[in-house]
Length: 364
Image (cartoon, rainbow, N blue to C red; front, side, top):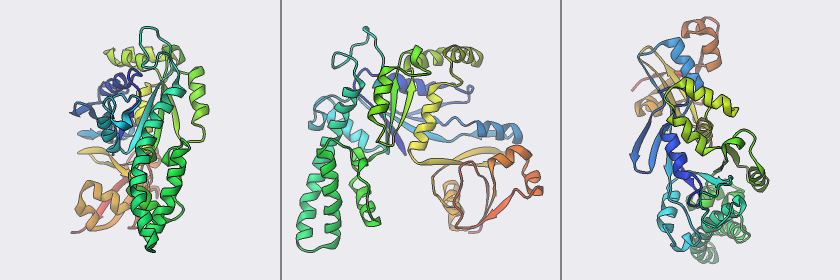
């Protein structure tokens, strides 16, 4: 599961990516591993794992991670191959969610590709290019669906119905994510189209340092524009974040943050938001050898969660022993949770909750 950072050239995408690569938010225990020049695996900051480490005192700790992709800047005409258009669109298609960076600061020393700062226009530039590419995809699929529908093919009729609605939305300048499937069959088809503008999106308003806490007029414009998109807006001073990553000690970083009026780096907020955007959540295993955060999809069952550790755990699943994180934190040990009746035994139908501390019984 990957979240791709997109935006026009010079809006702060690569600086943001580099901040994530050095995010020393909690302590030095916040690594970033480069797999390819533009893909990074970033630890998800989570105070719960720090608490478990404090209680269990394990030999090692493994945090949850999220993949972040730095994608080349898009320009007008990308849908027709202008600039790095084809590469850009190929990279974004491979991502599961979009982090859209918008320039929301004035600085005469940093040239804007379109001459002046206007996040509304910038957002529309990217939206239009992505929508044009999706329109091309939809029209190709419609040609086939229309032929099938004429012959009476039931699935083709369903496909034609949802494609027509998506096409209408795209022609109105709306993204595919604004079209909601009406049935399970439509939802399956909708997901199979792999449309770029169907991906969930998070907007990052890159502001000057003085606007990092409360935002500014540009941020207000963005919030008003996206209010019907069901999308989160994060305010972040990428320049200040870059300065924070240059500081050596935790104390220095905390003083810098306090001077800005922040309690933690914006990069930590962004990473957690990206994790949520990808429909991910965390459960924990806690033992003296290792305390570990495991990443699963929201809605996964106990056997599916067990399968993340090893496929044998899912195949031979018997039961899960579950303690809510709050109970583990309050009582301090698994034994005390058990004594207090806070350890539950759950079966195959159990839907794992974010923060569950789990132990699996299985037999293969």
